[in-house]
Length: 248
Image (cartoon, rainbow, N blue to C red; front, side, top):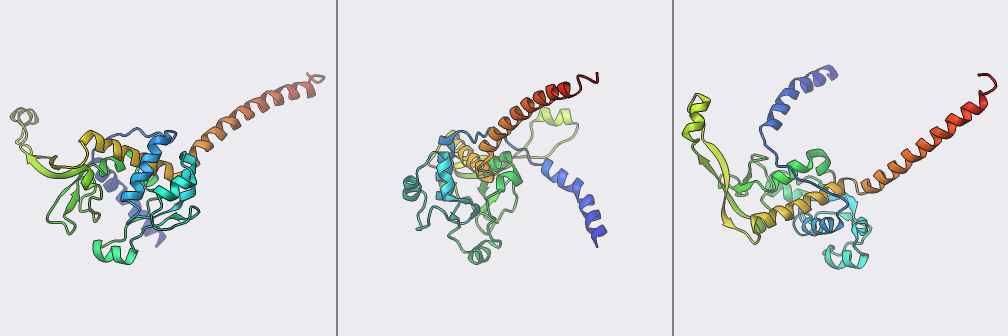
């Protein structure tokens, strides 16, 4: 049985690589040391994500590390009477979510580490209206996604349109080619496209931070350790010379 599982995994790797290469991801530059960005991202996460998605590895009290006080956290980011030491738990029951959407929303604690920041940034910007889907929404990055567009009031409503390729491009390719699909903003939201992209960038930045809240301290500690080991190496070298000076 184990051999069959390993063989199936090896055979599926090319298919997974091909599937991942079909989606062109937009790059986003994250910075977990930008506390203002993390604060804005935390606000968006609490207002738009925690209703359905939990972050069971993230405690509200860890938001003090990004510059917020406990009073600010309780007053602005905790709306259902939780305590700061509690984790971010969804208000939607998993059973209800599975009944309504067909699948329970995943925990988002490590979503940035599993999917990647670029994937999240692209995914949150590529929702479009699709009457054929149960929720009325679809996504070009994650086709047939069960999740509706939670940020639609900010971004607006996009539609997927097909455009015939230009004659020059078809001639260069040597064949007629296929119609190209692209997203068009049909109904504007509260924010302009640039403003919405900034909101998504802050949200992605927060999910990256949430995946490892101690990463900044870990990097600083690593630098100290390297300096310590460098100094210890020098001391060990001179100590070795002192021990072996009469032999050499």
